[in-house]
Image 1 (spheres, one colour):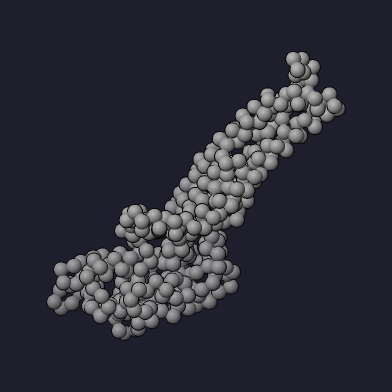
Image 2 (cartoon, one colour; image 1 turned 60 degrees about the vertical axis):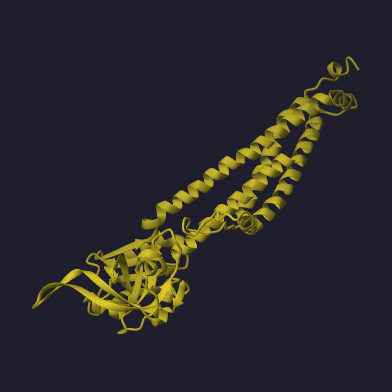
Length: 386
């Protein structure tokens, strides 16, 4: 019972922790990453309002927002850092991303047209040693022809906010946001934008929604979705979870082998009792059922104990690890090294049901051989020396 309970509890806890990491990573990635985007081959989308109306009938799209994408170098004094520049409309952007909720200093609404304000990632702001109110210079990777010759295009922006989406995917050290009108002025796009980004009701339907957009629009448009950029990463996480499930299932399998050996010993020890039952009229099937019930009961009790222990451990593993770190004075999940700086846990009912059913099935299968041996005991042979 304890062996089965230990295997079930370990499997529930580990899978819950992996679900927690998976959930936290997805939450932080999709708070900033584009779920589905629409653009053109030259990265210029004219009259985006009419395009938005065309795709309004596509089911599954929750919200949309125009954006301008560009690259540039941010400089301040002797600090220089490359950045991906996104021109956004605050009232639209908060519908398709969690940038507004990720702000640690300032507000998204501070990006007002004509003010040339800029919002930087936390690491990017630290690298440039700037805070809200400081000035940074944005240099575009294009040149402007003037009577003085060819000079790079640049503009001074005022830092109006700092956001933090978490480490690991480069959002905090490479993303910068400016107002859409300011981006149109700086990149000389007129009234055009780079494209539209969409938030979906179900982000796992992104490839299907992307195909619907391709069918609804002309071939001049490019439609992309998050699986192109992050799909391989999340497939690796899913594969890792599957492998951990298989490996930890071996613990339950070992406990099932212990159940086999213990029942075989019981059969050997109780041969005379089995023989007496046979002489009293018990059939081989009845004898077999007795040992199957005994083994199944052991498996059920062990699974139940493991279920309760695993749920308690998975529910409190975050606080347990935090307490150990505090007592030992060791920071296991340092924010400078890990994308998630604590041990998250998320219990999923599907995992619990699968684990419990698997444990019960293994326990039942483990009883078959000992029960079969018990049913083959011959009364005359067993009682010869009694």
